[in-house]
Length: 488
Image (tube, rainbow, N blue to C red; front, side, top):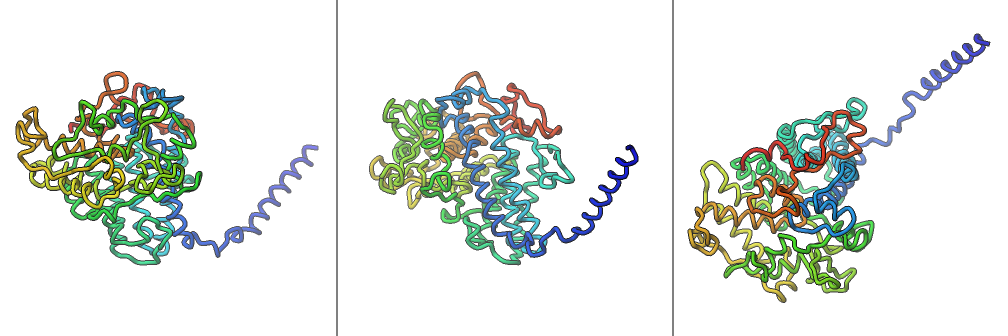
């Protein structure tokens, strides 16, 4: 009987080996080269990128930065800084799978056929994805991502090394885009339709963003000079009126998925914008009425405040009254105004501060808000007023309009720039990045305890499958990431 079993086993192994030889080389379709799918890979990656920037990560960061208030279920706990690792599972998976992995595939496929246009676009977006991961978690997987056969459990690399790698990616992207060889993805790239000049500008604004995050102010300033230089070149996520398809993700969450989970009651940001507040930031040159009503709206039942989700699709309001969180309202990813505000801050933080250049950049941003800006809809301006007149140096002198406490002029201007960044980035992750890297220089009061959260926890899904994942506890929520631990 043992001989029979042995003979059967040997025969089975021989058959399996023979079958493998028979199909070897024929189990791959030569007509399905991945290079033919480059436009679709880029398109899918851009969708994943929108979800990563616009989804839950931005909502949590907004709460922890004082722009919103968690009011129900897990958002009530998150508002009070009670969080668990599983809170980040879906967002981590989306960031690495739907976003970063798609662009890794696109880059590889593009380089195989020497399509430097597509490769450059993919590399710009990869830099944004890896930069975002480093911003929120610190040490993260980087060089070993995207090769599960060789690196099934990718190592976590130092935050500073990831930022350096991001800058190298952007340099590589710029070189590829300047070479501009290959077939453009056309409309499958729904940000720039494959326009390499625009993508190069976006790459430089991203370089400026991450140089700012690492406190390399001179390099940040140099990058802004080549970055997004008109409002029309800003990258916005386009949205529409179909639920579970093209809704603004904030709208989907606030109105369809989890209504009443997130409000703006007593949020610090609303007090800065509300003219009835004791800390209203308006003055003789500034009227925040339109921006306040574009971002927030009264809650009809309680008399509190909610993020403004008004839109012509669901509420029947005219287009000019759409709220920032409306269903079909576009969402900012990388903008002209961010480029200006990086320049404004970097001019004051560099080794030899330039007050006049910083003020000029701030005033350029204020001119954008005053002029043809679609950041504030005309309906809100007509009804509630909007004014952003240019500041002059005297406004920041001791005792001036923007310096009643007698601070040094440069310090008073810096605080105004940081406050403008804070308001301009409401609903965006960059606001949470600012609050942490500046050591909460604006003095945003924590919802509870003595300190604002400083990072996100590594997700349970990664901890359970990757032994290289650093072990973080609830207490680590308040431990600064390495780059933010250095002096501002």
